[in-house]
Image (spheres, rainbow, N blue to C red):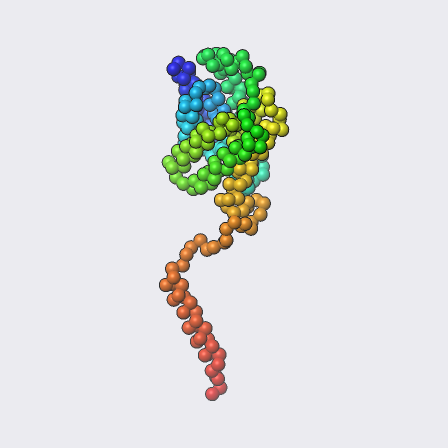
Length: 289
């Protein structure tokens, strides 16, 4: 119980520090610099702080749900996930420069978050932290299945996550936040035994790429290409196209957004026919008679 209290205190400490830094960034930086850099960096710092716990699946999943609820309520437009930033770029919601800045901020935030987590472990406030320090340089791969299956698992998690995200993007915050948090928690519970359930390239790169047991290319295929493919599949299924690459809708016919009532449509057709008939009679009449 003492270890759990320490980790919860660390979690809320990181949340509080990030909120203070976010408010300072809003005042000190221009809107563009804050939007592209500060909020992405700070959210990445917050997200990676979850890995300082080291408890059982029930506690970790509860903290994960809580983490995403806090993120959703205070993220201020930040995603902390490269595939979300790329999705915004493909939807024409962000230009190339802004997307590159977000990806850079996520990488820097990832490094800072991992450094803070290791510093927290070095204090050895719990027995888990002592063990982490002893095995930190000898961690093993999170891939516990075949390479193709692992890539499929990460891609599937990313697919469902992005599909829910696209579906709820216009929903009220009160409904969107718990729905996304529950989706992430369920996907994590399902995929943890196979890949660790990251479906976030930046988070995976920080926590598992340095571990032995798999090559760098294996990690790239599973934790980068898998989630990217899942995001593209979700975007294509939801939109029918990828606006940045092509406008033609491959899956859905282009129908009018507004339906015309049948009675009104019949009246409009009859009115057009009557107008055409009058024009015909007028053109056939002899003006010199």
